[in-house]
Amino acid sequence: MAKSVFITGTGTDVGKTYVTGLIVKKLCEAGVNAAYYKAAMSGNDRDKNGELIPGDAKWVKDASGMKQELSETCPYIYETAVSPHLASRIEGNPVRMQVVKEGYEKVCEKYEYVTVEGSGGILCPIDFDNERIQLEDVVKELGLSSIIIADAGLGTINSVVLTVEYMKNHGMDVKAIIFNNYHEGNIMEEDNRFMCEHMTGIPVIACVANGDTDLNIDADKLMELYS
Image (cartoon, rainbow, N blue to C red; front, side, top):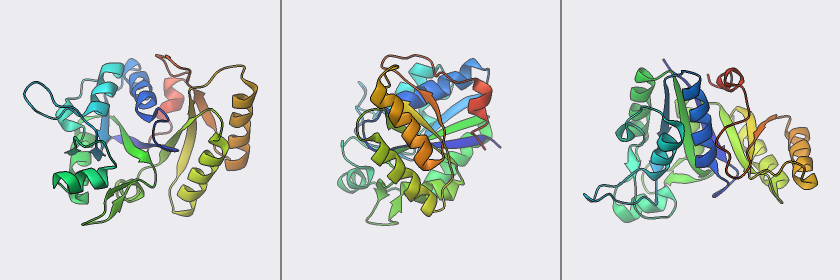
């Protein structure tokens, strides 16, 4: 059975998919048979044949060089660029937890390390009208520990601490934090890193600058976060 970890963000547009691509790339470069999975993905484009392309999965595949087929990466792909619960309502294709779990288990049977990405922040709903599924339900159902991706800039102390506290209080295990859009030598961002670690007790294991193509962490250390 594969080892896995869940990637969540402190909100939308913090670079969660970008950093996930670097994480999977690091695993692939270490010779690991790595894969990607996401329960539901909205805001996707169509190819020339009219088929929806799982955009986040394609980004991760292109950035990492992973061998996994895109068809394995996500059971629910929506065109409408809104939260998955609303996209599923608009498009008439509600998320079912059993389908999500079965897709995940199939990926785990084929690959050694599976990186599971969420949609937006941890409170993002992916179904409301039927099973009422939030991302935390996926994390618990699949038995995953988590890494939090956060923007390094102004406001991140509040968003990181709130995310960590919510997850801890709801029985989720947070292993690490990664900062994105980090500027080395920026006194505020360096202080943000210190304060987030101090206030949560969770280590910031890597800082990613704009345009980085490598995650500044040893592959062995990264793999220790998977379980």
